[in-house]
Length: 463
Image 1 (tube, rainbow, N blue to C red):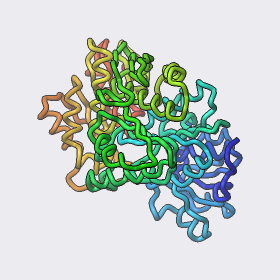
Image 2: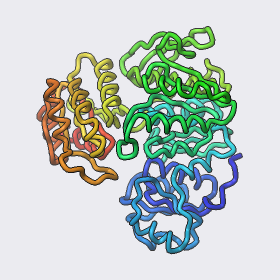
Image 3: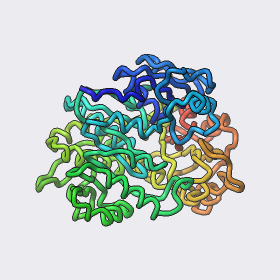
Image 4: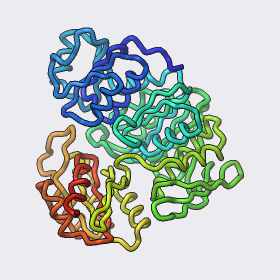
């Protein structure tokens, strides 16, 4: 049975209820019996999915959308202080609760697995959610992406396990007290909130320090930042550290990753025994995510061979190398990658999966601050493609930074020998791709913004 709903969460109002993180919390609360309401900037399938579980969803932000009897207003770090509903909350003296505090309240009293890292959080959380459900453990989970369709990013289960994606971008992951924490990697990102790697390490140390006494940290033995974090937290006496990866000293050692088209076969050495299982998505990085999920489940006491078999049931999450369709002999795939490391990993995975195909990329940079700091590395990553189309920067929550444009990426890509086409009008992309693509090619729409909307339009144009 799920823990009782905190009083503040009995009638919550979510500003930006359609967001990936917010919608999952809203859905779980609605399933637990809370009277959920909220607003979002535009109509969406996610809004409809929330209405289907009893939530009231307003389109647009207006003070009158906030009911006077709301017990709290839930916000993310993206909500600005002048939002009319937030202003109205202050006038009515309604408590304002950050998304991370609401999620922490949902996890209270349950065995929590919190998945952190600069990349791979959504995939690893999804793998665990699918595997634990397959094993009949009926977990609750909150993920930053949809498993199958709108509304599948969260679930209220009757089991005692809660799997959550833990966001480091605004330090909100420091609010959780997991039994098992996973750290996939530690890199400098979110430049508006972190000025240096030292700040990043301090933040992750705080997160790891919140693991309950006797709990477990599952951490990469391969990635440089994760190795440094492990060195920093080794002396925490109440913490069990389990490393995983291809390093020969890893506690869960990856013996072999064998690509098999759009899947991989993974063999690990665990507890002195070899264990082989299938990962139904391509790429070394996804195989390693599955091994992290395996190690975390074992830390909760789940038999490794059962969990390994169940992990094979995971077939992907929306926007993580998601096949959108095929037209005129051209496959269109969608990637959420927006950091150079993620971009490189997804492009290499596509190369390994389709060695005889040309790879065409439509890339939309995400955030001015990220482009300013990592634009050169993004451009170098695009050199892995046969040809790229680069769009203007998707601003998300940020205001423009003078002098920071997609040109930073384009110049670096061309310097690395990449063929790049600049397109400022997003609506022109389907025609541009139709003029470039030929049967057998792969087209990858890449980025964390609305570039994902182009996949169906490209397919329609190719048809």
